[in-house]
Amino acid sequence: MLERNHIEELMRRALALAERGGGKTMPNPMVGCVLVNPEGRVLGEGYHAQAGGPHAEVAALEASRVAANDVRGAIAIVSLEPCAAHGRTAACTDALSSAGISSVFYGTRDPATGAGGERALEAAGIAVTGGILLAEAERLNEAWLHFVRTSRPFFHIKTAQTLNGRVTRGREGDRWITGKAAQTEVHRLRRLTPAVMVGAGTVLDDDPLLTVRKWPPPGNTNRDIEWPEVQPIRIVLDSGLRTPRDSNLVRSAAAQPVWIFCSQSADATRRKALIDRGVDVIPIVGSDEGVDLQAVSDTLAARGVAGVLVEPGPTLATSFVAAGLVDRWTMFLAPDWVTAKGALPLLLSDRPRNGFRLDKPEWQSHGRDAAVTGLVETVSDG
Ligand SMILES: NC(=O)c1ccc[n+]([C@@H]2O[C@H](COP(=O)([O-])OP(=O)(O)OC[C@H]3O[C@@H](n4cnc5c(N)ncnc54)[C@H](OP(=O)(O)O)[C@@H]3O)[C@@H](O)[C@H]2O)c1
Image 1 (cartoon, rainbow, N blue to C red):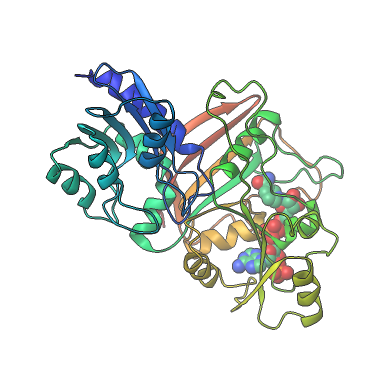
Image 2 (cartoon, rainbow, N blue to C red; image 1 turned 180 degrees about the vertical axis):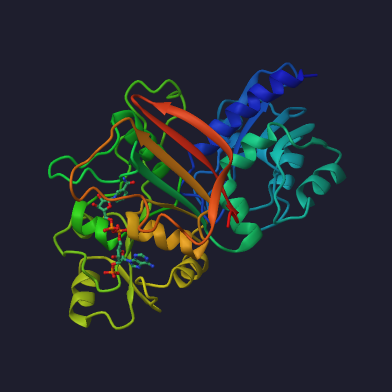
C-alpha cells in the first residue's frame, strides 16, 4: 500500500495537472487525476481540459490505455471527488469501476453532489479516502466552490500600489507600478480564471489587451506538463460605450471574446459599431457609479462565469468595496513613494462604509515587489 506522503506527492501532481485546465472548464471545476499501480508506478494521468470534454479520470484512463498499461487493481488519485452524475459526459464513478480501479484518494468533496460520488464508488466495492491535501484542493477551485454554493461569481480583485498607496504614477510613460516578476504573477492569475474585468477609465488611460502573454515564463520549472493556450473572456464596464473602436480590446475582439456591459440608454450607433467588430455588448441596469454591479454579477452567473479577476482603477475598486462583492484581494506593493501630481489613490474614499481584513493572508515576494492575498472579511470598526 502507498505511504501517506507518497499519496500527497501524487495529489500535488494531480493538482498541477488540474491547473492546466484553468479558465476553460467553467462552469465545471479544474480536476486532475493520476493512476498508479499498488507500487506507485504512474500508469496514466490526465486533467479536465474544458467543459464538455472528458473528465480528468477518463483522460487518465485513456492515457493509460494509449500507453498499454493495465489499470486493473490500480489506485486513482483525483483532486476532486469523482462525479456520479451523467451530465454531458458519462459518470466518472462508472468509468473507474468498470476499469477495475481498486481504490480512490480524492482532495475536496464536490458540493454539487452531496457525496454521491463517494457512495457510488463504495457501492462498487472501491475503497475511498477523501480530504487529501484538502486546503490546496479547495484553494485551487475556490471560485467554482463559491459559485456552486452561492450561485454568484467569485470576484478576485487585483491591485498594485506604491508604498504611499498610489495605483498610478501620475506621469506619462511610466505606466507600471510593479516590476516584471509581479506582472508574470498577474498573468498566471489571468490564466487560471475564466474572465478578467476592468472599468472604462482603465481602457481609456491604458488601452490594455488583458490577455495572458507572460505565463508560463521562460524557464518555468514545471513545464513537463504543458500549459495549453487559454485566454480569459475580457469584460469592460462602460455605461456610455466610451471604449474606442480602435482600442486593443476591440481590435482583438473577433479573436478573443470581449464583453462590454453598458447602460440601457447607450448610444445605438456606438453599440452597433462595437457589435460589428465582434464585441458582445450587454445593456444592463444602471447605478450612480455606472452599471449596476449586482446586475453584472447576476448576468455573469447566468452565463456560467464562475470567477472573475477584476483589475480595477480606483473608481471601480471603490464600487466593488461598497457593493460588498470582493471575495479575494491580491494587493501588490511596490517599494516606491511617489509624489507626482495626479497619482491616484487605491480607493476614492479612505473611509469605505466597512473596514475589511484579509483572512488567511499569504505573503509573497515577486522580484522587488511584495504581494499579499487573502479572502476578504468585512469588519465593523466603527
Ligand atoms: N495599479 C493598479 O492596480 C491599477 C489597476 C487598474 C487601473 N489602474 C489605473 O487606474 C486608472 C483608471 O482608474 P479610474 O478610477 O479612472 O477608472 P476605472 O476604475 O478603471 O474605471 C471606472 C469607470 O468604469 C465605469 N463603470 C461602469 N460601471 C461602474 C461601476 N459600477 N463602478 C465604477 N465604475 C464603473 C465608469 O465609466 P462610465 O461611467 O463611462 O461607465 C467609471 O468611470 C488608470 O490610469 C489605470 O492605469 C491601476
